[in-house]
Length: 321
Image 1 (cartoon, rainbow, N blue to C red):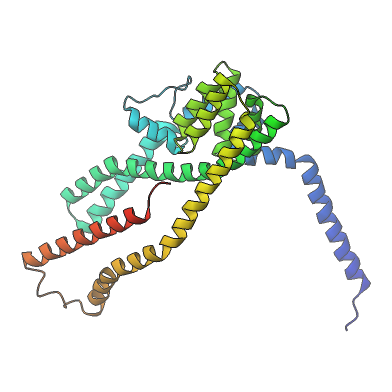
Image 2 (cartoon, rainbow, N blue to C red):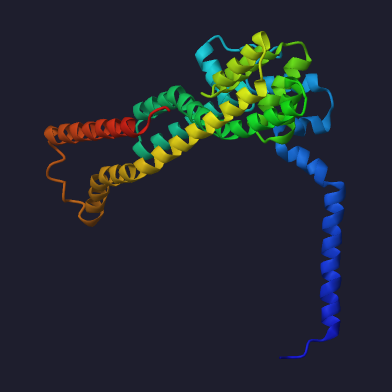
């Protein structure tokens, strides 16, 4: 075993001590501040100012609502989709992103296809269908994330109720401890209660902003307890167990259907992949039949039949529980 110079050992220990001292100083002086910024959007705003009313107004406007929490667009369904997607910046940012996407699609189609008509049609499709598709995708992801956090939030409320706290304080505990999206959403509920809204109205506003499937049970339980009384902690504990069981069932079904989904994807992609392989290996293989209208009609029918089959299989393995 080679000899180790004691000087290098001392240097290593001094370096390790300096690193540990720096980490300890960071955890002592900056950890709490950094934690508040990382938890959720509302706590990050509270770190800069203590005016909860102005933060409530800012969060509402970021979501496409007025300062009083009302819809800003005349089309209610689209405005609700915008709010439930969680897109920060509201209508202004959506319009900017849509126009940028339209310009990019127009330039790309015009360069690749050299056809003004196709470029205009593609741009119109992007400006109309693109925002709806993007918002629905964002809403679905946000609702899934909210649903995954929801049982833990209910458990926090149950523990707070058993400790003797009222429901608004229990809601505030969720806003302080959990990440977005559920942290800021429950924070908005707490602020609405603070500035005059009753508990049931604030909870219904929460369901309007999120639209997650499990929220009506939660809102109904709180509304019934507020009007008739009862052990809310026990009710919410049972609700948390039911939601977790539903998640287990969804994951079990997803696991059982994954093999069929993968087989369907491979079988659907095989003819398309072979078509492109043949085009690369032998570009003239289909050259003699492209000029016939029957070829295009047959390919269109085959593609439509394939899409219909895939949609049918998708509906068979995807259903609500």
